Image 1 (cartoon, one colour):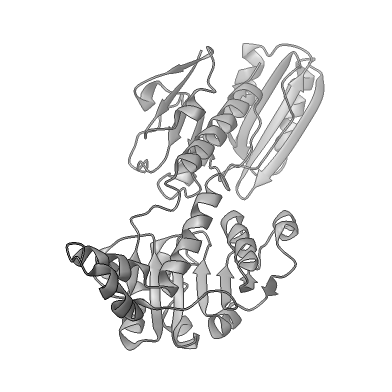
Image 2: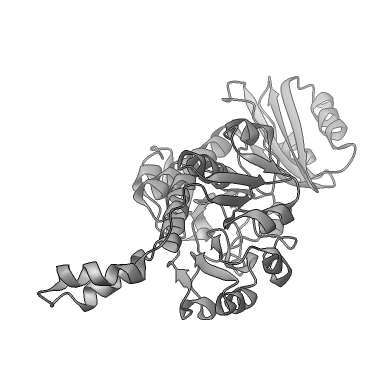
Length: 387
């Protein structure tokens, strides 16, 4: 029986996909697989029994990816599962920044006991007047699952949309509206757009991507939105830009001491993916990824190992090997099978950076002796007999 544990609450829509072949356990020390959302895993001891970790969400900064890869532990995430929830909040952020809805609602609360509030509102509403987003230029930095949805929705709202992503995939490009202007130089977005929203992963190269230099290029009165990661933006520089009026509003989903008290910061308490639908979608995708890996050896949406798919396991035996991406690995594996008079009926090998993964379908069961020979190959990190 396969065992899993949850380091955070995981939606029942996902957990309900585990059948009688799975048992939920209380600690990671007992588990073959882990489901996690935001729990920090960097200081955890990862047991030898642990085979996979699935993050019910996109970001994996809370998981020690290199440590896991070295131990042959595959780490999954769920890209796109919460994209619609974040997209809707980005659109809400643009509306909150363009119309002083929050100020108006707060004013109503201060006057809620005033019997003349209706008449008074007609006189006071001008102080909360704003502008429409239709016809404005929106720059989107990063055209992944969320960026694409934001771009297409903004086009439908009548905005002029500029998109920047030098690494956009072919599949992503096909999903973009033809009305979106694909920009090759991010500086053009800084110079031209009335609204700028950032949707890139947190890497060393993207940390503080929106900095003082970028802000200096922006139009006066620009609105900047950050629903990706807080440190993609140099928030000290952003606060100074708000004080001078260079930036009209900064909308962020990441509360901290730098931004929370600033008048023109609209700070949301990390609600981007906090919808019932997003949490369920992430849980379902995470569990499906774990099950396909544990039952069939297939890898989909891993962040530390390559994607690899041989479909359902219908052969006599399937073996999965996590190993370093070095030369002659495949020849060593096939020699071991050949010397044991074992026939390979199907195989696949994929690599990703320093790591690789190989799947073999065999026509005979794997003996303990052959298993040990595979494990002894220099560079092999883990060998799993899946069936």
